Image (cartoon, rainbow, N blue to C red):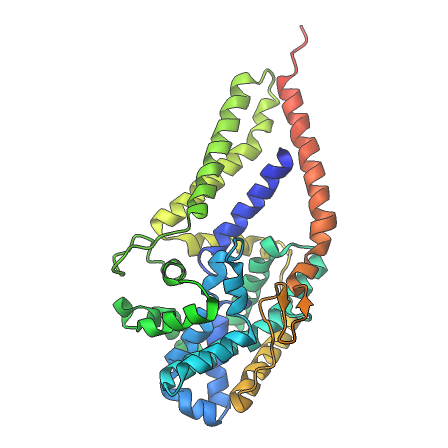
Length: 382
């Protein structure tokens, strides 16, 4: 029972972080790489797409919309938008439409950028291995650590104002209500294989801090049922266990025994509050910054410089040639263009956590919690 609760607790944390946004590099980093590439490269692609830079950026950002399905049966939609096949489909569907063509260019750029984080020698993969962390919890911590330090180092860069300008318009192009066109969302649906209207609303509203009940759209934003369910269950489990232990406990140990359950209830309340108030991204950002502040999964300055160079080089190379040689940039298990199955680099990187760290944590947690419960219900000696 304790093992199930611990796993549920970890899943809830990951769910909380996934709602607003996840990408190998955060949106601001993706935006910078694209703008820098267009500044440094003169090619047929950049000449054709300079008038449509918003389309390029939305193609890049939009590839991460299906991340809301990272842990459900539709995870293939996330994998699809991170594969070469999706780009080829996009090109075919775009035809002679320059706007859609440039949107497809953004999709390809997302992949050549993400492979530098999700690939075999990627940023997230290497740090998961180094710290024996899980993809579930470590992924966002590493990405945020990179983005925060990277953006601070770029504070005086001439492109910063442009990055901030476009950051306020993330995914606006997807909706007519925000000055966009539905054709871009329809293109993403062709690439992912699912209807992504609600997913796009969740990501855009969460990232822009509008709240999930904002009147921007014709139809209100609908959060995944499992998101609400985890928050509510955290509250019910936490409060229920706390009341039960305090009511039936016979010794002062009961006050220690309820600490975990109180934390669980508080976390559930924070999740629900963030949904209602539209502060999911702000709260998540605060939470995922804390481990790195303590030195855990903090990206070194040397690696920030190294991966900046790698990603920019990959971005520029694609803009020059238009050749996408990435079969998959999701980091999850996939089948390549030749029909060969590959275990995802992120899955491999998490093996230490999965087979060593998690079992140890589970055993320690179970023993400690069982000890506290036993001491709480042990009859006092007369």
